[in-house]
Image 1 (cartoon, rainbow, N blue to C red):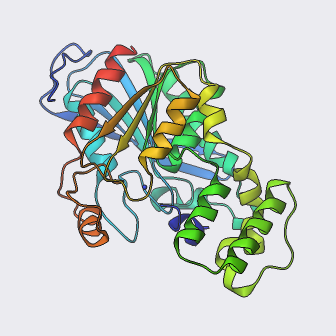
Image 2: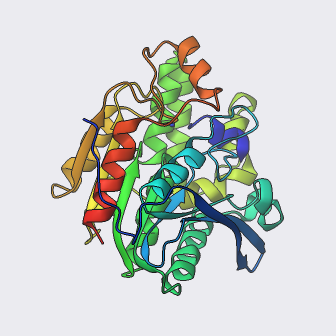
Length: 322
């Protein structure tokens, strides 16, 4: 599963915080969500001296990504810095390690038993957790990359959520993304056809018994049930179903998710607010170029702050949704 998901990686505005006092520091504490297969670990970050305030549930992106936005291949602290920036503006946040990852490793499932809905159910569990806390005046769900679709689906069944933010979220179904990425690698037409044929079967809910050795990383038997569960969802259809305020944030220098994706989401949800952010890349930081070498340097720099326009847009939207 990790190998598959790693292939799918992704105006200064001053606002008065909603919490009672402008925080100078913040207070962070560990929290736990108990599930049938094990505990999922998170961290709740509160503005200092706050008695009531909005809260944002942050959902990490694809691959073995932890609550801070890091994985074994890169460390950038993107979600950690986003959470800390929100706290400085009087907004609480909860971020968590995905099941099977880092502190939530014990909650992992065998690959053949994992389904996309497991991640969605985890988010609904965290939403219910936050909804019981009387300190929070409103819940905003913010999903990054793959976490965007997960968050959208969770919001469908949770009217306690006041608003939703898609950050660098894909605008096309997963099977289309895979086929585009295979094509971008200049694979021969015969291989591209094999990928499309396998995807067609999986989209119809049928596993493929015979998969060529060179496509095992993508379509090995143990991962096919997960792909079948994932392929059912089109982000455009899902975002169109949301009844709450929606904000779509997309970096112009993102080499994993393109402006086209944000436009597809916006077209599907015309009332949503769309903000395209200059220089921002997939890990939410400024990068002057889309050249891979410069992008990787930013991906692996944990000291760089997240983009200021991203932070300002998020704070404004959360406060307006309270």
